[in-house]
Image (cartoon, rainbow, N blue to C red):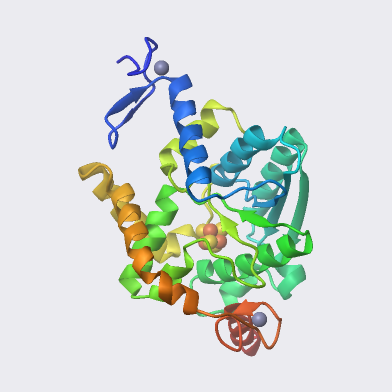
Length: 302
Ligand code: SF4
Ligand SMILES: [Zn+2]
Ligand SMILES: [Zn+2]
């Protein structure tokens, strides 16, 4: 099959768009989607210090690679990478090693911050002591570490590798849980104490992120986290993938609905005020942040 934009052989068929694309046009298409997202949501401005949450996986590596290639020559934009050492036996060592290679290749400052240093426990220990799925602790504590570290580094934006699949899964998960507060929090917003998060891959399907990483020969770890299968997200991911095969464009449609829904929820979003956690001082909706609540429960079981 030929590429729909030139005479070269196609390497991918995008069922949702109907297009067949060759290597060059596929890479351009991914980069076009990223540029479009940056423009549409005004994600990057002159003077930004962008901290990247770099896990060593394909998504965060691809986003760092594309933003680096787009902005590296632009004066006034600084890029820094932050990796979190969660302490997952047999896994974290590999992710950190890959993240180090990426930063070395791109010549980017790299900070590594661990759960153990920040909270006194590794994720493996939390998983044994706690009652919740490991991903719950991981998500909450990683968010705190990333925000704290980005703030300490003077970052004006915190970029994550969330792609279309991650975002669609989060939207559906929060809808199924009836958690409108978390749904609202998905929208980029300026909140005191929180470094604004940006998600330039929001419009790129996960399979295309993986293919882009392979074609560009980026140093990426494709191993799955040993805890991944225990999460609700894994069930939602499988369900959405089945839907996507049967009804191409399901994930884009879900995000389109979210974008429309969020406009009418915007007023409520502005009313969700943040306070400081009475224990750690991080921004939170109540008196105590989720991380401190979880830590208290874990400590009581030690
Ligand atoms: S799968 Fe869960 S535990 Fe593993 S890195 Fe992701 S959020 Fe953390
Ligand atoms: Zn082509
Ligand atoms: Zn706290």
